[in-house]
View 1 (cartoon, helix red, strand yellow):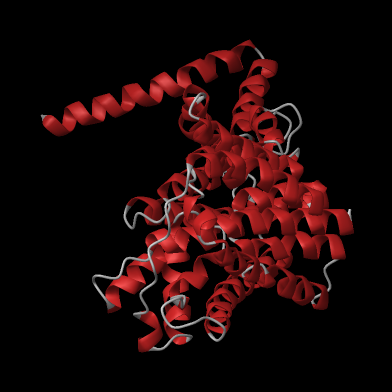
View 2 (cartoon, helix red, strand yellow):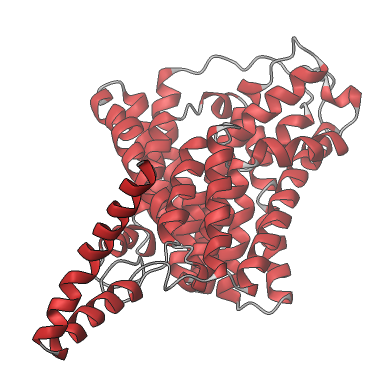
Length: 411
């Protein structure tokens, strides 16, 4: 009895599907043709009809990004939006319906204009400035040298990229990945090599997220047990006047050297002045919460969506990821080695723990946090975070200055 019900139901389903077609067929072939054409058009516009294996590769990468952000807590504010953006950008579609990020007039294309035109990065820097405390750098200015030394990775990678056949403009955009500064990488590539924007942006943010994985082995390889437990003097107390004066003096000094970096450095120091002035707290709060969170969402999602497989999976993209990794390793290593070099000229008691040298890259505050964690592994009472923040924020300034120099020389 049960089987009979299933059979009757199946027959009714077939009749429901094919009865309208048979009626249209009796009325003439035009109606049948209309139905078949509509069904065929529907099929051709589905992702299944436009599917290619390379899209599956990118979807898998997007899922990995989301997993690392959620399960491993590796820069979730970056990896989760970028990972989801990769999924959005790699759903196959038929062009012409203003869906894709590269189709003029589409919603995603409009949002992506903030990346292409380079106005997302300065707003990110405004938020960073309003969140950052420059006190340790003001208290111990010599640590700024560590942030400057770490930028050597940028110029070393420039040479490597040129040797691989990239144009000078592309080399400059690729090299900046070594600063581990996603907004700066986007800003520079939007002006020097917009055709490489997707690969450079994803590489820069990927290595920022992988700071806790990449840096510790480099730090341990280049230091001795004795160096890892060096205790640094507590930084002196910085006055309110110094905190207010620093963004003004810092802006003038850095932009007189590198005026091309004004959009980034101007917003960085402006955000810091809002924080330290004491009279613009509402503005500072907006910059470090609502504004930077909004821009981070839009930037992460659109950067991820820009990795459409047909435009992203190329030999150049693979080379960029390799060069970016080399640049980041060199930058981290040079920071550690330069701290060891400085110790040769410093008296006992004033020496620098070389573990903070790797914080010279501008991944704030993750690089400083890694210095703290590695230091605590060897001495549970030796807290390096406040010291590591000095080269870390110096790295932010240094990478922006380096970007300005490259922009003025290559554009």
